[in-house]
Length: 344
Ligand SMILES: NC(=O)C1=CN([C@@H]2O[C@H](COP(=O)(O)OP(=O)(O)OC[C@H]3O[C@@H](n4cnc5c(N)ncnc54)[C@H](OP(=O)(O)O)[C@@H]3O)[C@@H](O)[C@H]2O)C=CC1
Ligand SMILES: CC(=O)N[C@@H](CCC(=O)OP(=O)(O)O)C(=O)O
Image (cartoon, rainbow, N blue to C red; front, side, top):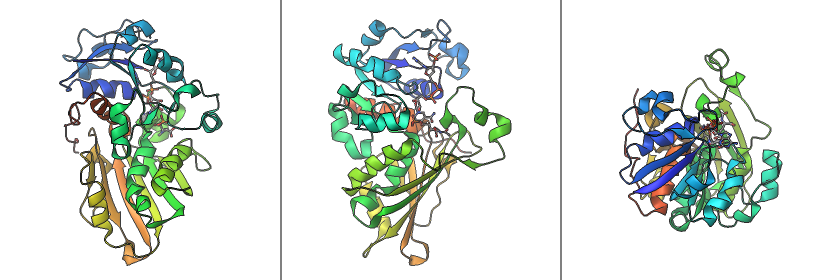
């Protein structure tokens, strides 16, 4: 069994890791940290886990106990993995970070967007961006994984085929995205209150969200040059889910876009290209590690519209993190990730 630890076990991505790993045949969760709930049994806080982790208790983060694990997930706010990852790597423990600490290759860029100096720039060269559909081979060899953000996962997967093939004008790409409220984490915040978030919808971060540089970096790699991206996220009254509506201006003769998408993701177990004319729903991915998408060319004109949906807590975070673990340890890619989505 692969022994894992989770730092930040009381948050939404932490409990989602526990839910997925409960069905994983090759993993045992040895340590789960929370400073505020240290001593409490995991299933006392999360009764959905009763019968699965009855011996496991939250504990204060202790580097020595974490270093006794084969791999440690960080499901923590930005900056926490900076402080601990180096020590764990030195002691032979692999690190899978769900936060943004190692996603941007440039430490100065990270400081600009996250408002604090990068805490471990010496580790950036070896960090691998954990988007399996792009970096599967590097992930297999990696010791340190930066799990992509939720919006960046939905947007990059939806646009990769077009940018890799040079079929759209890379200077003018638009990502209009909607997220459920769990994207903001479990901490108490006014915008997440029922009376604030339900029966209403709003854009935020329109003049610059911190996922913008991350998405630009990934799309730039796909396009082999800079990408001009407009990215506007919205908060919507649902618990889980991201819906990305992506717009590009076609250039040249694009050919059969449906075939392009089907071929690009033919060998990808967690991307589902739906039949032409489809409109994927966020509820069709709820609880599942899948990105469902559909490609449209309205009126056979020069605009292409891609619809891409994920569960922010699964393909957008914890499921993708488990997929990375499976690749790093040579396990079946589906281990812990084989459940279909819940509907309705
Ligand atoms: N929610 C989502 O949809 C997504 C989230 N992410 C990222 O994943 C990470 C976790 O997100 P989420 O689960 O929503 O966050 P939450 O706010 O729900 O949980 C954060 C967890 O981190 C712990 N924590 C906070 N500060 C520290 C610290 N200084 N040292 C150790 N532990 C700490 C908290 O426990 P305690 O304070 O008790 O120690 C808690 O368990 C974030 O970086 C987030 O941006 C990425 C993709 C999607
Ligand atoms: C709805 C909502 O508030 N969403 C969050 C995204 C959370 C997230 O995933 O952040 P990282 O990927 O950077 O870790 C936000 O926009 O800040």
